Amino acid sequence: MKALIQKRWVWLLMVFFAIVITIMAVVPYATLNRENFAPVFDGRFELGGEIWLYIHVFTGGIVLFTGAFQFWKWLRTKHPRIHCLTGRIYLFLGIFPSAISGFIVAQGTVAGLTGQFGFSLLSIMWIITGVMALRTILQRDIQHHREWMIRNYALTFAAVTLRLWLPLLIMIQASSGIEIDIAIASAYQTVPWLAWVPNIIVAEGLIHMLQPNKTKSLITNQQLSTQ
Ligand code: HEM
Image 1 (cartoon, rainbow, N blue to C red):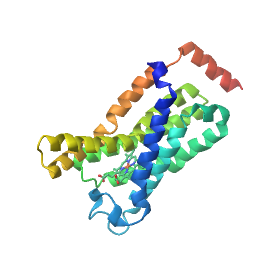
Image 2 (image 1 turned 30 degrees about the vertical axis):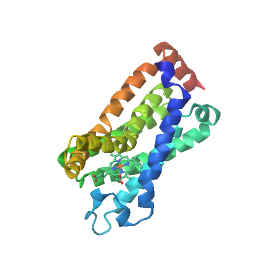
Image 3 (image 1 turned 135 degrees about the vertical axis):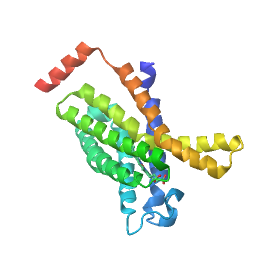
């Protein structure tokens, strides 16, 4: 199983989804035309309030795109400076502004209280795992930095899984005869949780499986901090 996870195609699949979803999600907003916003934003954002949505979407695009490359072994080992630079971009131009603006936008979601809580908790956990990833790398604790980055990117990937779950849930309900409007509304109330809870469970499983021999990792960390 560990060997399967470390296979190149798994990473390529992740990059593929990150790029496709970044393009699909961000392009309509890049037109700066309210008519191209998702229908959930109809009638919302008076007096320039949509600025938070723009900040969230554009910085979210940075997160999704740059984050995928942080797991590229070749870049980490051959060009550690680039890894370090894109890591800073990921956190400071991506995670932090996108999570704060995502939290603000979440307070008006049409997904109701369930959605408000789901998206808000996701934003908070996004920040916490990002801060932990930063803190551990500043302490040169590579092993824990890697683990916090896996958790953080699993949450980032909620942007992808949300857009996969949504049509799937709608299709399942519609195929059992539920009216399309009702199917959309109930699917939209489910995804603020379904988009990230399974991801974080998978991330924990991954971290567990990729765990190296504890003694070996301690030695590596000590060696690095004395360099
Ligand atoms: C993982 C943490 C994230 C949180 C907590 C979050 C939160 C939110 C919230 C609350 C909304 C508004 C939904 C509503 O009003 O019903 C939203 C919309 C949106 N978010 Fe995020 N988001 C996250 C990640 C991302 C990422 C990484 C992207 C990458 C592009 C992204 C792109 C978008 C887009 C494009 C919309 C507008 C809806 C659409 O057109 O599909 N978000 N997000």
